[in-house]
Length: 201
Image 1 (cartoon, one colour):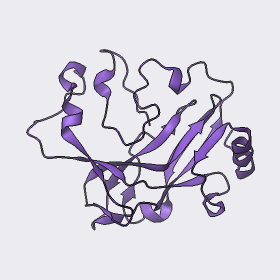
Image 2 (cartoon, helix red, strand yellow):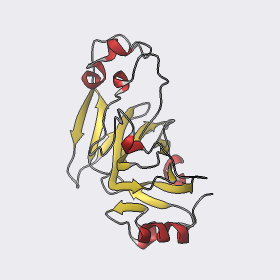
Image 3 (cartoon, rainbow, N blue to C red):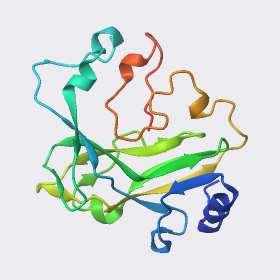
């Protein structure tokens, strides 16, 4: 069952949800909390690699990091996302959720109407998550989009699991993005060969 604003506030008081820094009252909706954009990004650089073979983890060692570069901008600067471009960003807020909750990241309607996508497929936040949430930005519009650090960029809602999970994210073997402080490139190469691919924040 999706948590209402009252349920979210109660879960925060109980320590089952932590959002740091805490957003102002205006960021709380009827069943979600708006989150803001940090000043750290990952962008694709021009490389001579012809393709990424996602079925061969061994061939990906070091390659995903080589394909992307970290970019940090000042709070007064802007990050420009051009039409058809993809980049990673992240929330300014650190999010922690209990083992009996799952979070959902969504974009804001007003930003989607100018072509900004904040996630492509990975919008679930695992029970037991602790860290900043990664955005998978894509500009589907016709004009470049200027993204300012601190911009209200998306919203997180929460849902109660039927029972407490026995596999919280932080306790998983190889939790690749646990307690991340910057948007990390794909770590698909850390998965065991033959294991199912999973999108994680």
